[in-house]
Image 1 (tube, helix red, strand yellow):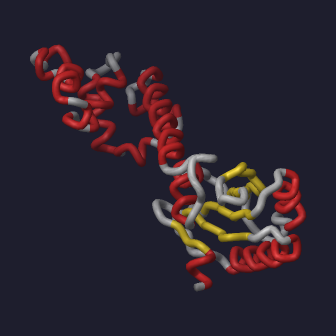
Image 2 (image 1 turned 180 degrees about the vertical axis):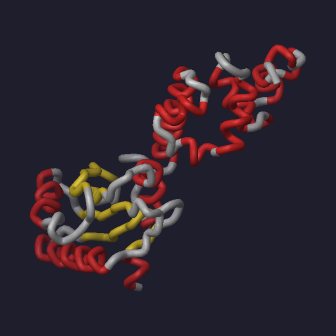
Length: 223
């Protein structure tokens, strides 16, 4: 349905003004964001895209793929990808972004980094540096590619921790397959880094592996 075919009082923007944002469906909200269609109405485009992909699958499309889905119109594809990225950054901030609140458990790390790390096509090992109140000082990329003993060196990890005055650290990496179950290498690396931290008196509080909407962590595994 074309936007002009909808009575003015029932158009998404008018309903948002009168009833508030929560009264609108996801396709209504996306239509407002897109503004105007080139090859089809924004109502038809938003409804079609969300029915086929929903937001989580849309985020996995490249700009070229999304442009094809928009019938060659690059403008709505750019708007959608920009909206998705802004949503991820907002979620990171709300769910406990850097220096927002103390990290108390593995879920805090998952909430903070899952949107970003679930989108990676390769394994990435990150180091979360914490202060004396368990607030995040910094997050550093340590290794990109397969996380194994040949690519992870304790000296590289603790060099950053010492330089930035970290009181403790946490390890976190992703499994692009979506399954966070640790490999034998994951277990061995965790043990090695924990022992190195004991020697340097910089505790390794946990190692979190992020999968698709779920995670594994060392602390629960050991308890």
